[in-house]
Amino acid sequence: MKKRNKKSITSIVREIIFTRPCILESIVNNYANYSALSRLLYDDVSKYLKEKDIKLSTIKISLIRISEKLRGERKNTKKIIRDVIANSSLTIIDGIDVITIRHISLKQLQILLKIFEKSRFYHFTQGIGQITIMTDYESYREILKIFSSDNILNVLENQSAVILTSPKNIIYTPGVIAYLSSLLSIRKINITQMISCHTDTIFVVSRNNALEVFKLLQDVIEKFRKSDTCYQAF
View 1 (cartoon, rainbow, N blue to C red):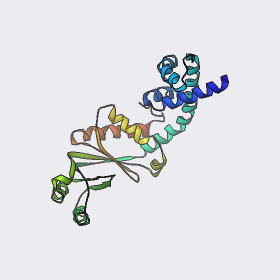
View 2: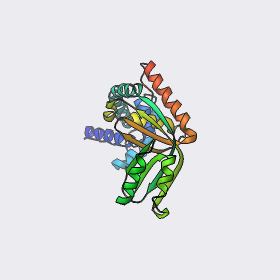
View 3: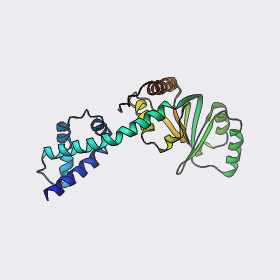
View 4: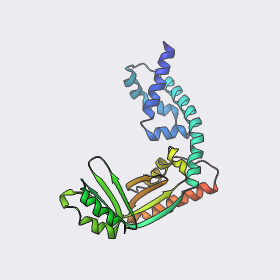
């Protein structure tokens, strides 16, 4: 019975920490205080198991076991992520505007395609109940003439697209985009749109942040090209 409880606690602790990225990264990178984490998680674990006499030492042991397993799993993943980024390149496209509409008729789509033929950049994304169009400023002005104001949900002007072109294995590698977007988030840079197109990852940001984003990502690429040390995630 005791053995079954320990297994249940480990499972619950794992479930809880996987909903808290900061805790997860601290144990994966081995800078967590397991005693403090045990106290932090105690109420949540007790609530899940509906028990009040759980020992903190049991939670601590569970954290250590999970940490050891995750570090083994992450070691190979980190190397793959580093290699993907090191073999990537960047392009920046300035003067981008983004318009989101409710719907588009066949006639409007045909007009839109003709505009796209002359565009220096465009991207068309259909969601559930809305369509987002990214394009250069010249095309954007023409597109605004197609749709009524009632059909336009949102407009973002003065944007830039920073495009990361990576090796094909980025498609099968978890964590690359999470890592790069976290670098922007921690610097309070908002990504207004993020789109994946095969091996291209498009970060759309305010024009005011574009050069900072480009330099930040370029520095990471250069660092991983020169260093054999795996990155430390935030």
